[in-house]
Image: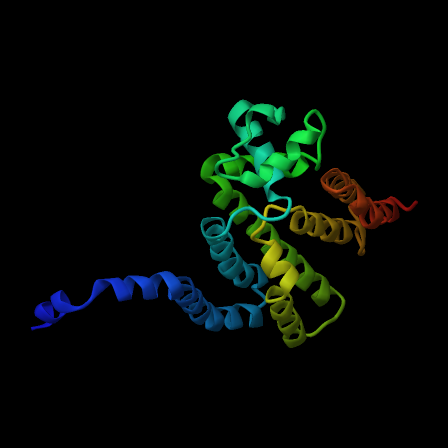
Length: 238
């Protein structure tokens, strides 16, 4: 009887329902599964696990659901050149059928519109799994960033409950939740700035590590030098 009923059920309306609401239902299922586990992890100080469990699935799914946004077309152009040709000469790597937005960069051929540092950092993940792999790596960077921020709060004497609440708020906020799934410099830049702060301050500063974080951050985005180099200089006692 069940088989007979299923055979008579109209398939097309169900397909349309899945196409329209499938992503929303999957997101709701992810959040329902994640929320109780994240509450437990955050209460026990396992900030990285709580963040990675949410950010990585979202980051890996985003390239499948949305086209490249903002500066992503250019970073993908650099990644295709670096991974495919082992160089940064992008003139033969345009894929205008797949990413029409890359056309605007032809006028600047021969120079870098954005720093290639992000492409260098993401190249191994991109070589393994394309754009989803690179986005997944950025999500792990976002989870690490949040974990370092939580450790910093604990080091400053913030209580466990307050640290967990602030971490949850930061995790679900627009900058971290959104930028961790986009091939942009903001998340790795913020991570390097936080790492420079962690290594450059405290009872036992690590000036060499802080300086390395400042240099890589500056290569990613020159304006990050404004927040990372003073920290590195302070670590050296300058």
